[in-house]
Amino acid sequence: MIKKAFYKTIPVMAGYIVLGSGFGILLHNAGYGMIWAFAMSALIYAGSMQYVGIGLLTGGASVVTTIITTIMVNARHLFYSISMIDKYKDSGKYKPYLIFALTDETYSLLCDDDGEANGSINRYRFFVSLFDQCYWVLGSVIGSLLGSMIRFSTAGIEFSMTALFIASFTEQWIESDNHLPAIVGIVSTVMCLVVFGSENFLIPSMLLITVLLTILRGKESVEK
Amino acid sequence: MTAAVLVLAMALTTMALRFLPFLLFGKHTPKYISYLGKVLPQAIVALLVVYCLRDVSVVSPPHGVPELIAGGLVVGMQAWKRNAVLSILAGTIIYMMLIRFFS
Image (cartoon, rainbow over all chains, first blue to last red; front, side, top):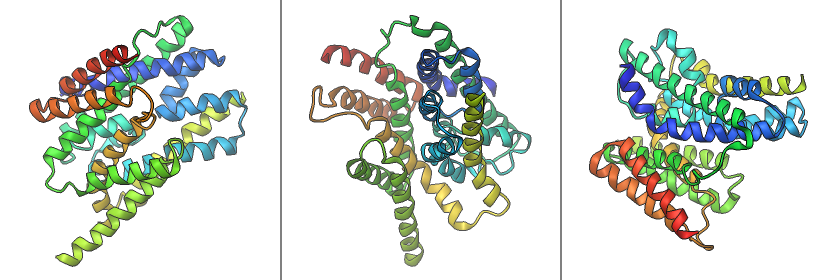
């Protein structure tokens, strides 16, 4: 069980240790040491938000600005949670941590496992979530310790994240009979990227996806 | 001190976003929300793929060629072997070689 969970998280390990280190280095350079890297990765545990957070800390942002920025950057987590409500329904004592630790990558690892909630799958999901966070915390602490000492001969290793999503996308495509949600996802996101630009397209994309999938559901129920 | 407050604000806001849907719909999940839960994963993973590639420029060299080749390899490997670790490893190694070749 733990072994299976560990094996599942290996792709995330490489990505999180590299991206976590990047975060730790930047935070170190901004004047916040290892304790801060550890605290942020343990408590916030949201990759892109932590990168943005460095700017908020050094720029002396207000609490209100910080909260609004966090909502903007992390709004997609609402959607992850919505799609996991049924899966996490009967996860008992693991539930609070499973919800807390639902990152992009953990979501992509767990959203396509088709088990009903029961004792062993809850434990499995718990360990997948826990391993992922351990990699992230470890990465950021390593980055903070090494500071500017790291030589970036590892350029390109960040593609492991992209590859993880592409593999997950391909797997879901093969497994599913209905490819419409996947197509809606790609088309909406590319359209919003073109219209809103690479800084601001995430939220519009999510809204457009939700609207289109809602319309498609209406059609489906009429046809039936 | 101020920094600690900001970190806490980020942590609590992120937590609120993650827990809110469970608090609202956890007891009784409306059919519509269940439907979204079923179709959203595929759409969101598609979104994340595009998100990762958002800064790839088609008009300036290397025109997204490394991403295209490495990404295509991941798709092919996954369709062939159905082993995510293998697909990701192969795609990443090829990508790291390609960006050195193209630079």
